[in-house]
Length: 259
Image (tube, rainbow, N blue to C red; front, top):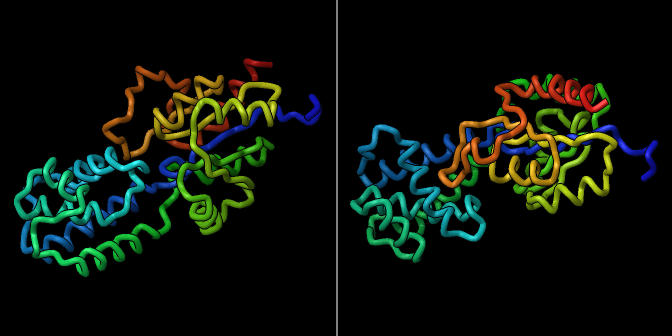
């Protein structure tokens, strides 16, 4: 790619919980699952924060599975059933992971039915996060090349893009494992004349590797913060925002300094 063909900059954007509120979809699905299991088992959670109760088990299971939070929902169903019927969280996670379930009050058929309902609930289209529509529109109008990077399923991300009519702003979606080498390869291929940017909600998956590769990082924190995520002080993103609408101004200001 010649100097004339090289873009002034490139803008990489995370998808889930950056462009849209995937966490809200998961929270609703998890709470619906908990209510279903409570009704089926005749037991109730004593914790006042019901979502925190679920998330503690959810993340404990994710730490054991090779795909992290993308583990099959049946593990969560079994672990919640065990926790609702007397097991402490750690034991419930261990037993569910091992494939057993102490309580015979939840049959294999019931587990399958609950899993199907949860999977269906997780297919719901998430709402856009604050400022996304106006921010993307401004970036596209100004001609910045936008590339969405996701560790989720590419077809699912494209479906959400189409549903929200964002295809005119997001021409490219890549399903990748985000690490420093990925960003370095992309920068070598795209070869921007000035600094590139990465916008994301996860410090460990989005911000730290992008910053290590030399990108200017914009941290857009979401409601979802896994317990293994790192602290802002350990990464120091270049900027932090509360609305995606601030992104074009940040990029333009940075490019003026470079020029």
